[in-house]
Length: 129
Image 1 (cartoon, one colour):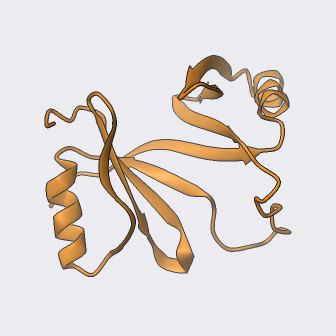
Image 2 (image 1 turned 45 degrees about the vertical axis):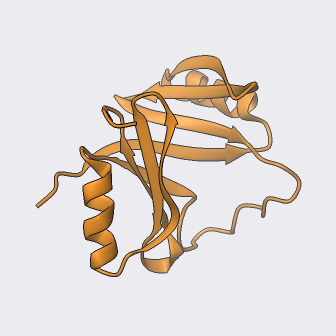
């Protein structure tokens, strides 16, 4: 069976900078500010975990009232993503984004899990084209 490991948490915020500052202040998270596709990007490292904070737009639904079902998505690291995606498809998994290379060496895809939870698979050591 394929090996799946934890990769990251992805948060959405109307004010990513304020959110990052809160995690930094409250928990001592390391904040990394970069640019991706010409837009500001804020990533956190907290307890060895990667936390990505994305800017919301006005058309994004507000956060639900707790308790609620689901989350934006969680990511799992894999090796040989295309073979794993093919195996999951054969098992009837619904993909919401087919495998694609998003930058050199990084290939991703998204699938829908129970309760509509979005799951990202990431191959950060992809050797293919």
